[in-house]
Length: 197
Image 1 (tube, rainbow, N blue to C red):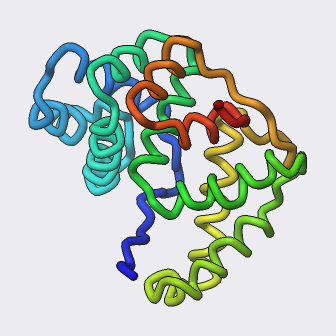
Image 2 (image 1 turned 180 degrees about the horizontal axis):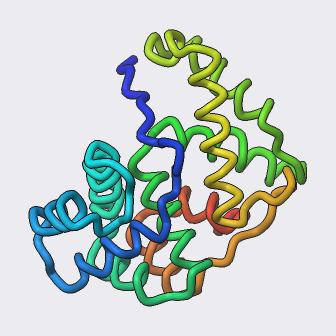
């Protein structure tokens, strides 16, 4: 099995406001080189160090690359709740381990009518993935806890988790239909918390 698990999540895993700033520039057709320059040299994202700026802009550009012109325009124009779900969608496409967590733990909790998701559930998932992946197996307990914190923070910021209780998301009908028509039914099911017939 190919060991393709890696994590791009940092201490600010969602980076919603920063991603929206970059998204607005992409909608205006600003080049990625110019965006990098503005982030690094002009501190567009208001981050404290050049190294953090470089890391953040690459993560954001990679995530937003999974949104086509229609979705990136929606991301910058729709309400914040829907925009956060679109950003979550891009993370699901960008991060295989996070996608598997959302499908195997979050989604399974929904369909089994469990309404809670604890940090220990996330850590157990990551630990079990260590049985399949040498890379994950090598992660320290501290790394696993930080990653579990990041997953929990993403779910909280996207309002899919509140005080360890799973909540339904809001994904506007036109965006939902667009994603389904473009062959992403499984991720949409995760995002809306129900099966699509």
